[in-house]
Image (tube, rainbow, N blue to C red):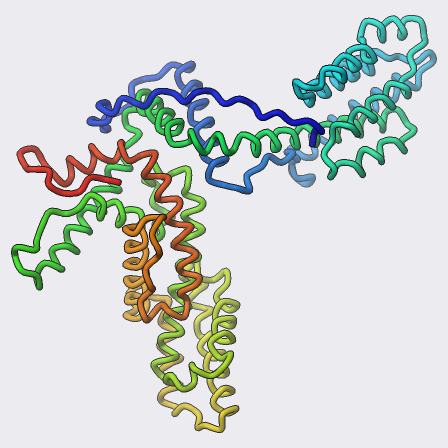
Length: 485
């Protein structure tokens, strides 16, 4: 990276959105002009970029390079080869034609200037002096241009500005004698250095972005909502479905409770349930809530991990029910069993057909591990009927309504909702007994999930509030329940 680094000053955060506009999220968007559509696209791009920088600690830009076997890659290669062949032909003519080379030197100068920091006053002056384009043009006119000398200065300047990871590539440039290959290599390495500078700037600004992220994203989404009033339709439907589920669950719980303990459905409970529903979202359902769309890839990945944990816990519970705690308490048995389950289900748990095909083989492997463990201890093997029952139960786990899989899934969802209720500052609750063997992985997943949910509520809580108010407290009813966090 540059030897001297200045942190870029962040703009002051925009004013908070006017939340009164959120009362009417429904309706069709008006006919928009091209300029307004482009403005909306820019707003969406900025919002997504800011959110990705804040949410993904490993976020960085990478040089774009189309696949070599793609049409774009082949066309790009042909165009580049034609350009550099043309430059080679110009420089090889007698006398040499430097028209394209001068243009490239101007571009190199522009790229080098973009890598300079405000503190690089002396280096900027030196760059303007050596790469004085008027002087270079005069040298061309008089046949006195020394391209190798200029290239040497350029590579030395690049060496003083580049990150340590680019040192070998800059050194390699100094070994190139052909001016065309040298210029081509200079442009390639300068492109990498520009990407390095962008990523360095992002990391430098990240602490400032974290401080202003909530207000920035909220204001940007308000701008989108002003231009597209229907931008909360899917969110409203998502919250409505969660409210219906929470009301049904509250009604079931209240059947065994005294009347005085019954109360209105909590807005916080609805949001908790709505967020947990995102981890089991049907990928074919296109009506994904707009307010969570930027985190969909992360939530889908967590949902797949959660599905794997549910299957692992189901297999462990079924196995334990057949062989008892004596075998499960053997040193290393549970670890070997979990490794086998994870290896055999990897990649097959996301599709029902693949899972259905993988489970019979998993049942055979589980029985083999059980037989080996019992044999090592000098015990008797499982009776044939127990073996057949265990294999059958594991083979049926592909069904979503499988009793054990359903039970584990409900326990997991309850644990996640309890984790969300505790908040980030509080200690996570202990997992239920059925989940103890996958408790560490489940707690790690719950922590990652909680971070996403907490930030989402900080940003979009004011947008959720009027929607939940309409769902839970129709006009004429008192608002005695909790508001959204």
